[in-house]
Image (cartoon, rainbow, N blue to C red; front, side, top):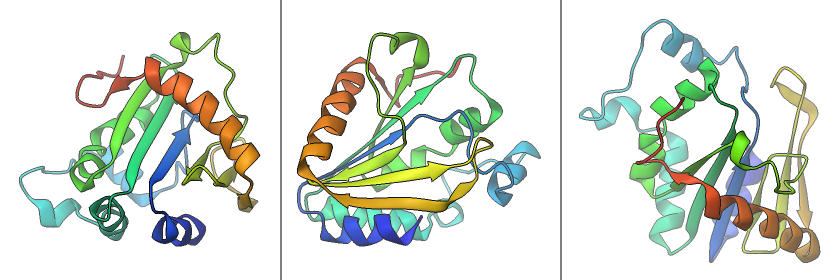
Length: 172
């Protein structure tokens, strides 16, 4: 995970929300390629799937930061979203609350144009991707802007209320 997010999460005191709206990211990711070739995480073998990002999540949630991740997805889902679904249980185990919102249920919502995070209702981290899901040159934009955070969170909350918790969602 990018340094800007880790730095802001280390400072967060109350909340961290993450909005993901793409149907694929970094298709050249070695873990995604391994998944395509049949690799699956074994929930019973924690050592095989625990990674440094999960330490960050566990530390933040352990000090009381509420972490939520919302994925807005097209259905039927892409192979990448199916991969994300399969590898989400570690995020939940570390303390993240994850929900899924089919794009067909979001048609009347006004969602931000970029994926990103909001930390403590004050700092927005916007993610910049290329059309094929790679990080754009700018990658991330950290904006300490409570007004932008308020608008972003308003859209996020409307979508969150419609979304399905990870334990109940089944990719179509």
